[in-house]
Length: 363
Ligand SMILES: Cc1cc2nc3c(=O)[nH]c(=O)nc-3n(C[C@H](O)[C@H](O)[C@H](O)COP(=O)(O)OP(=O)(O)OC[C@H]3O[C@@H](n4cnc5c(N)ncnc54)[C@H](O)[C@@H]3O)c2cc1C
Image 1: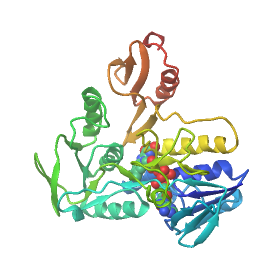
Image 2: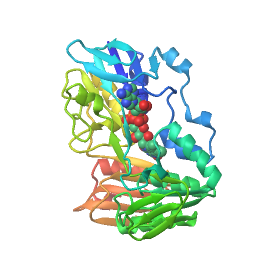
Image 3: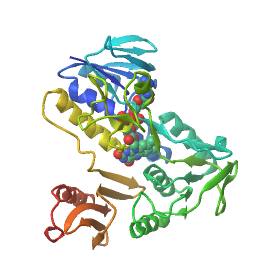
């Protein structure tokens, strides 16, 4: 079977890895660079790892796996009637087409946005790294996981780091957990400005509704916009992302979507961990095995500088601290979620228990 994958990011490369021994796999990738790890970009910017560490797979790896890799090629539109992908470099026939086009950063809309950068690609990272090394400060706008990861790593590396965030809590968590996260990051030197809306940026900083915050290097991490344009152009249903069912099927026959570009019932997963899990589940489905992805249950580990944090299942509502690093969330007596700070081994055990919806007395 000919599988054509659009996108050589976390989801695309994992799907190619999983399916190439059984199928003829072709990847079409817009960027003219081998797969690199986006979760490692802030470690690279902070100077903790060499550039080559970002690239786990060589050209040789693709060749040995029999994967045809087309770099620097844009997928333009899907000719569904003829089952051909039209690209900037010609047509590619497919039996199965998988859209794994990821997402791009949400751009700021305030005045002076030309003074602000966003972080998604290696090219973005190179630019930010160069400026941070020159000015030795970072003003991060947005307290989502990408902003906090960057803040934690840059502060650990000794840079002066500020985070401006419009909400009063971080990562959609409650006030107690927000306090713990801020405390840990403050210990590394990160300054927080919560409840502050950015109104304008200039060369020296940003003006918020709570006052001016200085910072030469400004990085905006306001969330992501799924890359759904190819689906729309090809007459495939899309909302915020490309609409899929729990088998990653789009509205078009033999066309699937995985990773950051896919939306299931309002959910866009937005993590590399999820994109890779999508790829593994889809590989099973393409093998003819019965499998589905549970979009309702999410679990992720982030590392903000030195401290890791795991978010498992539902992390809102009635919560109870098990110890100073573990808070579980309950529906009645059933455990439906947990946040674990530092102890990631414990997070793995808890994840199994949350999935099994054990009672809080069984923990
Ligand atoms: C700085 C940073 C830190 C992160 N940290 C973490 C973390 O700690 N943990 C975690 O789980 N996740 C993290 N993420 C999120 C994670 O990287 C993404 O969720 C993941 O990369 C999504 O994988 P994907 O395959 O859907 O998309 P991507 O990895 O974005 O890959 C999509 C690819 O498709 C290509 N493409 C797009 N349109 C076309 C087209 N028309 N034709 C051809 N090619 C196209 C793009 O160039 C891109 O290479 C981080 C992201 C960033 C930016």
